[in-house]
Image (cartoon, rainbow, N blue to C red; front, side, top):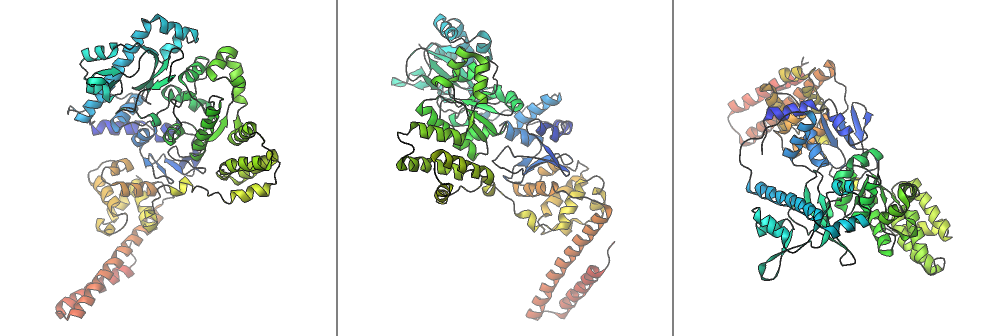
Length: 581
């Protein structure tokens, strides 16, 4: 799937990358650039920079970087063609794709998506014709607006879904590939979800990738999700995130619950920043996905023992991914769904306001469930479970305060807890483990400055008129300058994005690092760097000639060759010692 290069360039020129990224992240002015905490990896200190003049972003922690299209690909989990369409719509630019036929893989994915969309439509039709299913939703106080917002449906079973999809031309293999049916005895397919209220699970683009079903009554399992398929991975999606993203960004935090009704009911009451973890234990991938939109989360799982354990596990994952985590506990052992129906929005708002930090929740829960928490054995067991959480707190002041609170609650000396913490191996910082590029250290200051000058309209003409392309041979920045010289020769726009088409990943990474350097250019600085680069070129050339002279002397070759080499070296030496203008 290709687009006209001129259209892609028009889209790129129509959107300011600072405005685009600023709609996702709180950017702060830092010299010539803007900075923020990177949305693609956990960090405490901002290493994510956005250059308005170069129209690129770069994280010096994890290495992510690129232009507006790359940002949308990473942030919205879209392909390049999807990102082009997304940004074209934002800019009001009409795009035309090439007429070339999609690959078999893309055609197959399109077929599976069509099957899922049709299944969602059929489920909604079944709900309209099912009195018991409508009564069930009414008894749970789910109104028509919420049914429409979440596109709730009903799966009657009995083969209706398979029959109707087959009549539309879908094969059993296609229906199994997208998780709608499973193969039964004798190879006959049967519907995976039967006699259940259906909730479509959508990706960030709002496309149905799976379904979740809730049994009407006391059957088991209570909740059943589509199996992993070609379109869906349980641990990589969050229910309702496609609907909740705007409110999560606006409010600055997300509320994480367990079940579908625990998510749907808060939305009905106006809490539109609620998401659910699809009935599975939270995964690192889910936390990373949410980190694109916020770094604050309130966990509001069920208050039973299983829910408390799941809360701690999920909170640990969030902390490792750089989140600020608090825990909300609904009184009376209720879940968010039933609590809201009985007590209303204001009472639930009060619950959220009274949420507590993870450590406070953990200590309270451990003390409350232990038979004798203040006995020596009880204190030892609680400390053993709390210490890993204390050691994981990166900030020294916050860690010291947490140790003090723990010691006070357990009536222990702080030094005893600190002694236990020494035996806990702290996980290495993800930022330190992130991909770092050591290459810029091998690049001279003259190269760095001339890369910036070549990209600057005020100084580029001097670089391209006074610098010889062969000066960059065997230099770390050689391929970058080759790309820039080629763009200049073709009279194309001298941008990082344009150069990226001619560079591999390593050289593109180096260019992004160099382009985001905070430097002040002037004619004097550029001229001096040109002199330095030219001098370095001739010094390298002189060393090469000297090596040839030594070989000629060693081999006792003709004096004529030796004399030529000596004359060449003398000429090069004069150029080095000259004051070049």
